Length: 328
Image (cartoon, rainbow, N blue to C red; front, top):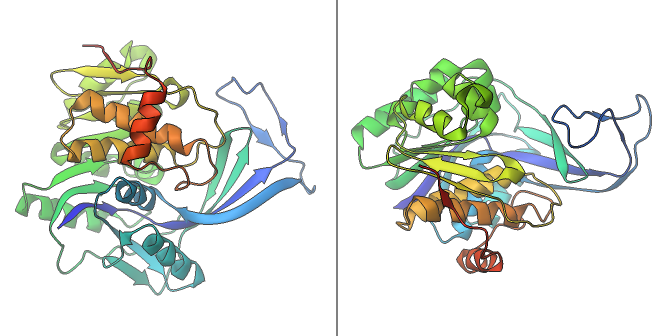
């Protein structure tokens, strides 16, 4: 029996560290733009390739924390697909649910790293996502970012959940799903035990902004009315919130040096969900999520820096003054 099966795209990330660029505004501004000289040569300090994609990152984080994890994904029959599968195995992720698409290439992205932030150029293509003939026994399913063509797979997932009511579902919709298929994503929310999103995504699902809501707790309670049992919302350096019908908690991020934010949200998700699997309560799950995300941002790449349980406790003990706070 698997602790978690993640469902979503797995891809090959090419990370590039940009040495010199110009910006159109101060880095404190939300609308900051990274500008490169057109037709110019931009110096870089290094580059490397690594496993990417929300589903792969969360499966890797869960495995690092001692959980048995598998991934349900579709790869192309190309060199990138072979590299991705090898990286999945390297990260102790079961690949028995990986399928291969003869018509569509393996997804990939280019990650531009500059001054602690990342800009991602990501390939999205319509894909065929087959549901397995026999789904193995599992405690949690983590349903996340998929490309165009995901709808039949989601329908099969809903059928599976109806037939297996003890399986718990965590949902973290991807950018394509939220932009182009929000109503379809809302169909699965009544079956969702845990929704993990960033603040911008939470606003989109709730249907109103933070300014209108006058606080993250109001956004959490609005999302709960859609049928979700528990919500966790991340907000970069400002930390994260989580809540259910009974309580809402907030926690600041640990004051660690930021090298790159790639994979921070996925590290939070794997830490938070792992805590739930180890039967920890709401605020301890929040602590695990924050600690794991702060482990990842000190490195380039979405797996380097993932914490095991010992590393997680070491991170928590290093910042005893940063504690979850009960809001309601």
